[in-house]
Length: 511
Image (cartoon, rainbow, N blue to C red):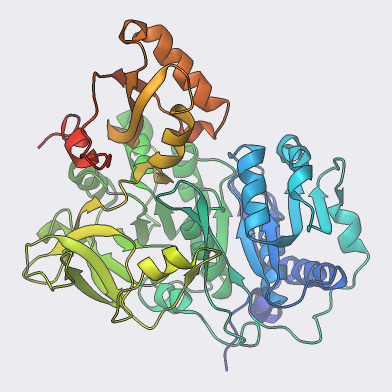
């Protein structure tokens, strides 16, 4: 039986790159990745972590990232990658909530890591790469103490990503552990990438996005389960991305629409000087893609542009190729995993063209860690699950997204939940009432706007706008903060106090 893990390729491809760092050019071979992941697994086991325990990773796109993930994976652990743009308090909440007993970070993020001490009560193993900080031991020394030998028993772990809920607090999406021997069984996504997208040991995959997001991590590790090469960008730059596609003859890449916009904004002469003919699949997801942007990308790159719709929960997967999309512009495709149902608020199936909540009928089960109420709300009495999105099916069964039940903002492919921002702003003494919404932006898709009822009408103006933006930037990650503030006399609320955000959004979004 074929094994799907990096060690399966050591004999035939041991000196081939599993990872190439985009900027530095550093290469990690399959032999190195296999050896170092075994050492990581031994470090974790020595620290007392057993299958089902939790590891947190606070790390930039770093050459060591994958060996830590694979080490935890082969030790049967849950791994939680953490967004390093978060404030220490936000990072600390996730470390505590996921019940991590091991934490990996780097000297580049020592400023954040050093501010976590009050949240690390249960974290016995704290390792730092490329240097040290108070409370952290050197990662390199910890590995050096262990032989690159497999554990006596290796079972598959899982990734537990965090995705904010409508309360604004992130929630861990916890899949069940399979208990399968490490590498013995390919997951659904790996099989999907192999057979739907044609990933092979000869594939070269460009990862332009942070590994703390589900899709970049899922794609990259699946490529490594199939023996391909991951070209990992330290950070996205449109010209550098095109240069890497040309230099490494990239065959597969995944983007968010903002990446497309930034590449399209390059001067025509600069865009055209890069050879991107090696691309077999340029896949995009994570946020709605403007139809005109996608048409331009297809005109530039040809029929290699594909799209999918899915969530970190893994409960379903819709996909659409170029030709299908041109026939159904704006669609996110048909389901490849799970069966689609569009239901109204009473649970009745909607006919084609009628919008309702999107539900996936599948065998996949997941839970939101430490939140049984949110878990229960994600499933209906038939056992179908929903990500809370609204959409409709056309007569041919193609799915179109129309709204998000949670009013989540997607800016540059990153999910932002307004409640968290509102909770901060409402504490400011100059704010009487507040609503945070996403408004159209040509490059990011959406930008965060705060609509404020000031405590004193005379205070409304540019000075207060700047003060409120600065106020939020001191308390939460900058990418979540408003980029603009509008002042109004009242907000549209029901007598119950519930905010009618759909009505508010209509003021900013074209009909």
